[in-house]
Image (cartoon, rainbow, N blue to C red; front, top):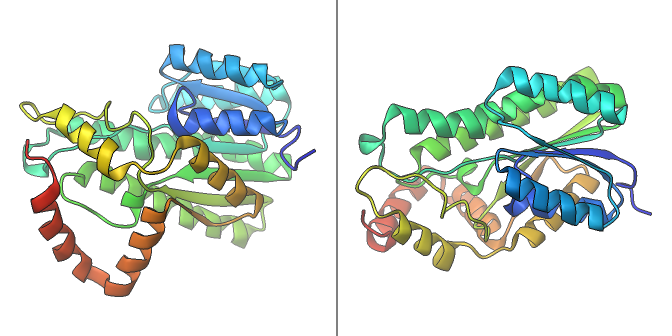
Amino acid sequence: MSEFTGRVVVITGAGSGIGRALALNLAAKGARLALSDVDTVGLEETARRARDLGAEVQADPLDVTQREKVMDYADKIAEHFGVVNQVYNNAGVAYHGEFERTEFKDFERVVDVDFWGVVNGTKAFLPHLIDSGDGHLINVSSLFGLLSIPGQSAYNAAKFAVRGFTESLRQEMLVAKYPVQVTCVHPGGIKTAIARNAAVPDGDDQVSFAQFFDSKLARTTPEDAAATIVNGVRKNKGRVLIGADAKLLDGWVRLVGPAYQRVVAFVTARVLPKG
């Protein structure tokens, strides 16, 4: 029996990738799962596989950008299970394109999902986590919440915001002495479909970008990522880095400071696919 046995765990973006891997990892540990995603087909597959592992599962379609629906969803889950112990704000989207060519709607979409989705989920579930007497909030940022690269201004903005928001909230929980742990997760390149589903400016070659990400940058499986996150939650870590790339680059940026920006710009100009 693990410390996750019987815990009620909420996971957004559970239809694929890290979200699915988290659901299956925690299902195997005896958690009770509240899963959501806009991808209802993927969500049902995750729910089926989690139930096959013996987990109690509540699966619901949910768009994390729709604030009132997220608030209602939190109350529904708390009423259904009687308690909420852990919330993994994992839902996210990607976009690749230079800011000069990025439309406001594309920038706003990334910020709405990747940042405001985290804020909405946190605001909705935090009272329930406090009431549980043993709560844990896990917000998924990115390696790109630790350093920036060209073509990722929208994603960088959202993921840096998640990091700042989460670190501030962790401090607030400590000051108030609330029974809620807070963890910020920074995955490096993960073998998921996020790059293949990423939007790009009109006229750009999305396929080449996705192939570059999958072949050159994605090194960690979703299953390994989930295991690292769950281990970090078990240890009540404030920050969890996933993958050797995240650990190496985080250390490098700390060492060289703002000078990293010129190096990244130089390298990117030579290796990233054009258009």
